[in-house]
Image 1 (cartoon, rainbow, N blue to C red):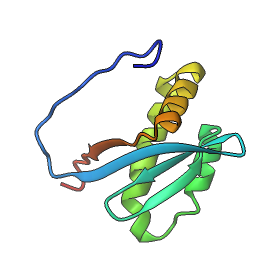
Image 2 (image 1 turned 90 degrees about the horizontal axis):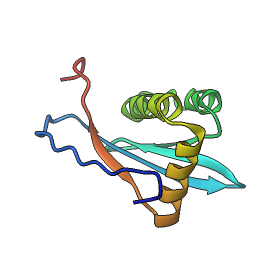
Image 3 (image 1 turned 90 degrees about the vertical axis):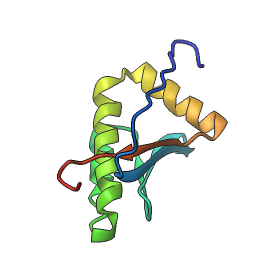
Image 4 (image 1 turned 180 degrees about the vertical axis):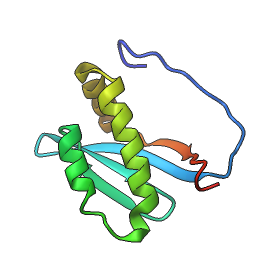
Length: 111
């Protein structure tokens, strides 16, 4: 585990929600986040919350609905719950080791 990070595992029962994957890459020294649902991926500039939300508006077709939801939830937590140093550390860790964060999105309005 990277310095200053604590790993946690949370095991829950399968809720039959939407598959959610998030990863990062860097291009021209800027961080980008890739948010993926079962069928589509969207790529957003993750330099700031405002820039990412602006990029998110480009994905207006209905097929991006779940990926948009995944991105919105992840970005809100990423930018509000983590310090700048923690965000940089997470992006560096994910990009260095080619990691994809996998989970399940549970939205009571869709179940």
